[in-house]
Length: 591
Image (cartoon, rainbow, N blue to C red; front, side):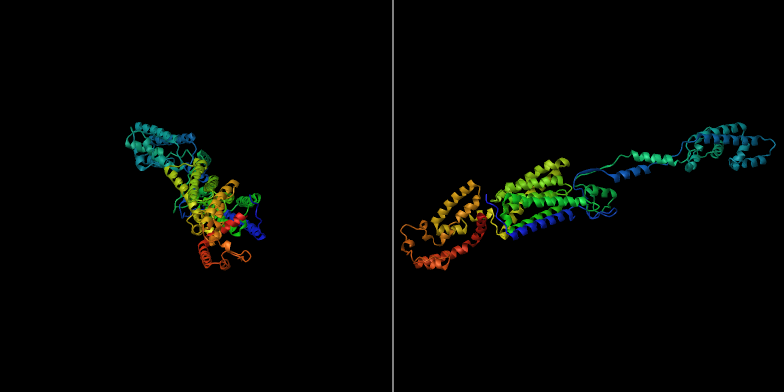
């Protein structure tokens, strides 16, 4: 294992600055609610919801608002409570009726009074107001019928006064007197009884505020607390509906709105950001390997990708399925493909933790992000084949299904439609992550001048233009390079080095011999001229470059100089791109 390459002071300053900048941006992403919390567009009670607002998770809570509404409804349903009918009032009124009947009887039986005087006396009675027709009937009725009328009047009044007669319902009580009169009486007798009894019907039950309050309190106490339940994806307020206090309570219980940014939330966000900011540099310091991080372009790209993927994860909050379909795993795959497995692991862990931190469903989203990212980059491996990315996408989908089965599915209720939706989200997350990583690693490798495993495999193919030129120009040296590549690859595997990088380096280690292949014995045909035999060792020039004009000018024969010139131009035109590709890997091997 190679020792850590010392970084220049300028790179160290850049590393520290990027750690501080990424930490501040991450804290802002966790604190500023731009999609962080699914706050409805309209959160005031009485306003109209602009969009359909759905529950982001399953929840069950005791609704204070709905409970209070139910209690108020039960309280308003309580009728005014009156006291029990007072029997003393009934007895008093019956006694007054009997006294009045006796007075009427004495007037009827007084022989000293004329008919007109009797009429006047009956009309002047204070307890009852008799009509003229009733007075005439009283004066003409027989004594036997009068006795019957008196008895019936006392009976009817007693029956009526036994019932509760309220102050505000006295008319209702008096209107029902006639229905209580016996049907054996004649119509005139019934009317007389009704008129006599009605005058003595009075309220015997009165409104009690104390009893009414007690009844309302009992009704409130009888109402059980209302338990409100929402399933993930269930509509809380449809678009166009007015937001009620119960809806606002649901938003608060779901964590969708809060009265303000609390210091506890800011402290929690700052704590997790600090932990992640300490974890990454401390790991690389203890591992004593930071070759990748010594390149300013590399660390700038890592910081930018980290921030972009973190900010993107907060744009899908408030949705039921979208957070699980967000391809955050592509960041881990991309770091691994560009900078190696170790870099992918170290940066994927804080990214997954921060992306799920502080969300309503973070308890199942965080392990989902972590497990899928870790298993995906481990399945990707050295990223030498397109199948490696396809394999990583499949691993992400399968590990995501396992994570959801372990942490989310037991907490919710799903039907077949919901199961199919989750399957679709998992498939999308896996293969979109693989596709994004495959595309971005190619673009970023070109931009950063990095040579990926896919590029190494590409330039190691026998049909590569430079290797084809090598084969045709110097077949002996080409075969020698193949043998060295095979041996070097096996040696690299034994010592734990990069076998692919070693093989490609060995393939091209003698590429310069293709400029003048006949100067090397493995390329000389039997019977051909050997330029070394005719050369004077004391006059042999020493050119500074095999491809310079001087390297060709010293050739003794015109044919040799022409072949040298042609070979120089051909190899320069055909191999410029490949040589530029190999240079970064030579630098890595040197470190």
